[in-house]
Length: 380
Ligand SMILES: [Fe+2]
Ligand SMILES: [Fe+2]
Image (cartoon, rainbow, N blue to C red; front, side, top):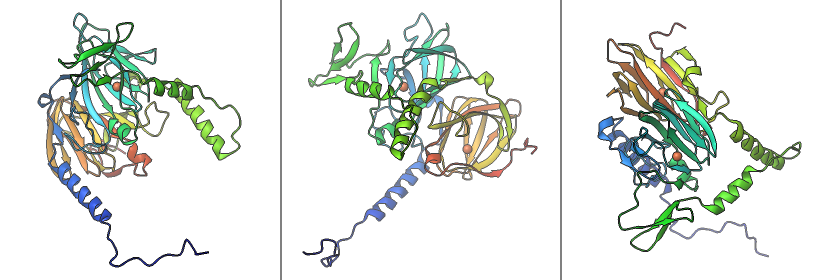
C-alpha cells in the first residue's frame, strides 16, 4: 500500500502565504491608530445618550454596537469599554435602570449617590466610594434611593464576549425613558412587558431573555460535585461545582470605607481588586489613588492597559515622554506597554482618580509591574 504520510514534492513554483506580513501590517496600522487617538477624553465632549438599559456616556467606544473585538473606537483601549450612567432622582423618570444580563462581568464605581442592586433577585446596597461588582451572567438592575441623582462610572469587557462568541446582552426590562424606533411596532408579552419590536422591514427584534440559553445556564448552575476527584476529567466536574459555589457566595459590593489606604512606591493607593486575594471580579484590577498638591506619583510600566476616571483636581500624565493634561471628570487611557507617571498641577488641592486595569494580560502571562521611579512620599 502506498504510504500516506510520505511528503510529496511540492509543485513549482511554491505558493507563498503572506500571513506574517499581513499580521505585521495590521499591528503597525493599529499602533498608528492608537498613537493618533486621544489619551484624555474631555467629559463635556461626550454626549449623554439614552438606550434600553441606561442614560449613558460612552467614553472609550462608540455606541454603534460594532465593537470589532479588540479594535479601538474612541480611545486606545481594547479589552473593555468605559462608560458612565446616571440614575435620575425620585420624582423624575429613570429612578432605576433597565434590567439585563450578559455573559461577561461588569464593574461599577459609585461616584455619587446611594442605592441598591437587584442581582438575580438578591438586593445589594451601595453608596458613593464603593465598587459594585456584577458577576458573569447575572441579571442586574440599579435603583437610586435618594432625592438626588446617582452617578455610576463603569466598565464591561463586551469585546471579550463578542470575541468568545457569547451572547452580549439580553434586555429583560427596558429603561422608563426608552423608546423603540418611530416606525416600529412594539411587541409585548401577556403581562404587557416589553419584549422587543417589529421594524418597518417586517423583521422582529427580540431583546429579552433567550429561553434556550437560560435553561442551559440554569441547568449548569445547579451542578455540584461532592465526590473525591480521581481523574483529570473529575477535576473539570469539580471546577464547575467550585465556580457555581463562588458565584453564589462572592460579595458583590466592596465598601470604600473598609478598603485600607496603602503608602506604596507608586503613591497613596486604596486597592479594591487585585489577583492577590479572593475577588468578585476575575477580569479587573481596580484602585483609587491620591496625588498630593503639587506632587507626583511614582513611574512605571506594565503590559496591561489601564484607564483612569479623574474624580477631583487637575494635573497631567506623562505617557512615554508625552504630556497629557486632565481635570476632574475626564477619562484617561494608558495603552499597553506605556511608561506612565501622574502629576498634580494644583498647588493647593489633592488630585484623586479611579484606576481600572485589565487582568486579561495577567492570565496571558504578562502580569506584574516594571517599577521605574518611587513617588516622593515613599519612605521605604
Ligand atoms: Fe450591564
Ligand atoms: Fe499603571
